[in-house]
Length: 295
Image (cartoon, rainbow, N blue to C red):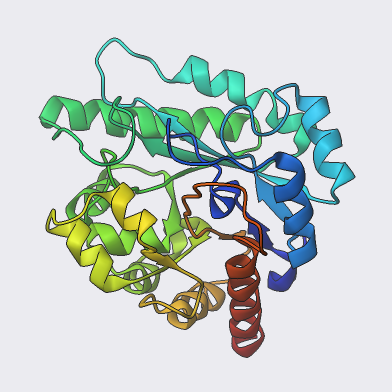
């Protein structure tokens, strides 16, 4: 990993509409997405959904090297609360590919077992005990391989709202992925969380959010997917997330992880104009300006 924060800005295929959810929308080719990441000047990328990059580790590493990109790691949805289901074998298989690509971060999401992120069950005490235990087991497994496991609170998963985030902070040792958008939509102020627990944050997904659309998700007026389709995620600096406060709090504690640009997007067809890269450009330039100001 490079030392300058300006060289730790990465991309994520979801900013180009590439997503693991069935029926999410039109999926752009890896060639276009990776080329446009380099045009923006990003240093690295997360893996994206299964099948976006080659599954064989050496082939993945070559593909990324051909585009002058490093591998950050990947968003990994796992069932963590279901009795009789052990998530470790699946994680072990994924981690086998981390060495060849020199990826550093296993981004865990405690999924419900349903498709999509528009509804979720509630956990009972036994479910919570199992989930928390699995988080610590996965963190230990990743550490044995030199990889940092982080929990990604996410709308429509088992860890979404403020109470659930606090419960993990208090009863698990796992580090966090600070996803500024999902936290805000779930009712957690990401700037305040960064101020209160910067030592738990090892990875960031930088999103900006239209708070008025987020409020409609929170009160059930809009599904998560419909809100994304309506443009709930905005380029950094164009929404209601306090990006400067977040970066300031992280920098003050010597944060040396990645800043991954994520503005979840749904496409209906191949863009004929610039397409999603235009918003990624805007986010990258805003984040660079904030990082320079904080430095």
